[in-house]
Length: 451
Image (cartoon, rainbow, N blue to C red):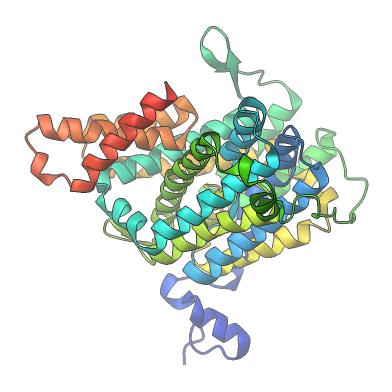
């Protein structure tokens, strides 16, 4: 008889869960999945406070957006866990919330209610191109070297976020970025957390990243860098001011919806959703062992889950959702299946009631995890064919453009513009999938539009 904690000998609900998520096949168990799901949540939890602040600049109710953010994360992450069985958390995108508030509402003069309709339209189109496998065909056409470069670039990008969140790296008018004040108490807290987490990993301590964050939070409170929360439980703000507004606005004010401005907004949302999520899913799938050659396992289910979550976010009343690269922190802790995503969704639900406690998990606490995840993700660099210049150039530009331009989408776009050019000049044009020529034209137009 198999006495494995995740093997077929288990009976009842626990056994059914283990079989459904194939714990035995993925080499995992309830403890690892729970710890991984909690780690992913802690790495993502900041969005519950950042998103309301950003969208409040667009005139939206801060309390309602707090609740909407959590609800969108719950729905999206649960869909990913149940449908695709991926250990991936979903929540409102950090880049798209800024685009929503500052570019669309404040810059273009579109009301936030109409902007939510734009989110709804982009989500519906997103679901359609996923359902008809157009999105999957495009992803399969992208060469493996560029996918690996994208994963490495995201690693550099997420490490940069961690370095900036902790003020180890700060902005500079002379050099764009420079070294921050390493003696500042909050920065020292991050350095402590980074050293401790790496030490735990080197000693092969289970859940090193998670327990590193716990110890860092406790150290922060003990030294006064992090305020001890004054309450444990608080009421849940009403989501009514934003819930269903997209649908209401669509029918109540069609003259504001069917405009050229909103068409541009929808296409921009769609573009960033498509490639940000694609890059993130490929990166997480690679780290979690969910790749079969050049393809993701259960790719269509994963793509349908994340595209459906965009529609849900619009109806709930927040900016578009995306798959979170922070999910790799959970994967590094041991998460391998969608059960960890359900755990993450559960913690988002609990966070609605215990929001004061989330103030303890500051950016300085999560920064070490992001930096370590960046280190782990660039491990795929040695799998890229650097000896062939026609591959090395677009691969390098893909990975360096992401942190340099602060955009996953820009890195992917640049790589897919340069790759066909180098392959043609190398005499390897026949190896290019026809879709790559179409993507070349689309991204040339994209960069022209940005200009």
